[in-house]
Image 1 (cartoon, rainbow, N blue to C red):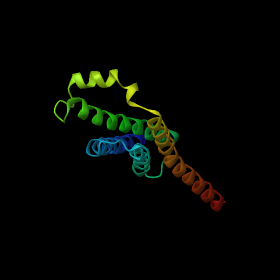
Image 2 (tube, one colour):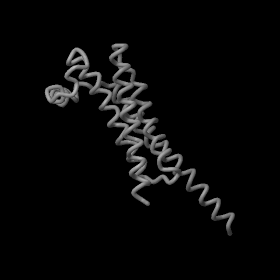
Image 3 (cartoon, one colour):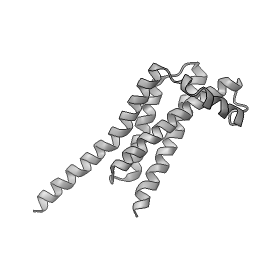
Length: 148
């Protein structure tokens, strides 16, 4: 039973991270501009995905899942836009040559504004499940008081 309370939130959060990364990559490619707000939104998306999948049974581990998967989504978004420009199109996006160059230039791909929006994504991904956890704990305490 406990595995489902972690497994499903991981799956939902990874799905949210993948969708968010694809959207961020597409926006960067279509508009030739990386919109940092999308990175922040990835944090919100993974946070809400964890809350939805956990069905109100939130722990600190769920917050960690939301944070880690938001970072995965941000890295995916960066990778998709990098790979598109590096290969001058979608062909070759997933070859080892592109991966190698992405790893080599990884730190160069993140500027000051990227760091700000990554921090906002991390905070958001942490806080959304945390608020739900606090709400659940508060309701449990109120129920215990009412039962006495």
